[in-house]
Amino acid sequence: MTEPKTPCRTPAEGRDGVTNIPTWKFELIRGYILDLAREAGDAGAAFSDLKDAVAKRLTDDERARLGSVGWYATTVKLEMEVADDIERIAGVSPQGFRIA
Image 1 (cartoon, rainbow, N blue to C red):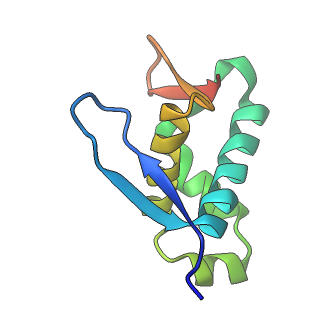
Image 2: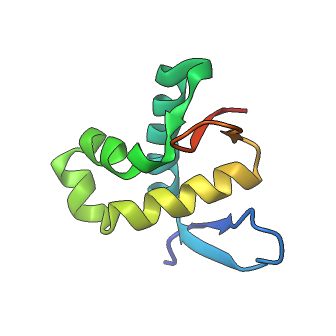
């Protein structure tokens, strides 16, 4: 049986590629990103902290099954931008995001 997959798009203009990742990985990382954004509130969370912040939330089993935390966090974050689940915060440094 084939594992269900979720398409992840890139919000950059001219980048039409789609990466399909296992749905359980997408939902796991998406949930952690949403938790981070909720906790940060309107001030937002920093993109530069995303990989480490997600990694800290993973259980040992999740980390072992997931693989590259950074790659999945980035891929899911990009899809969440395209889907308008999160938005970039203009004019802040480091670059941040919050729930759209």
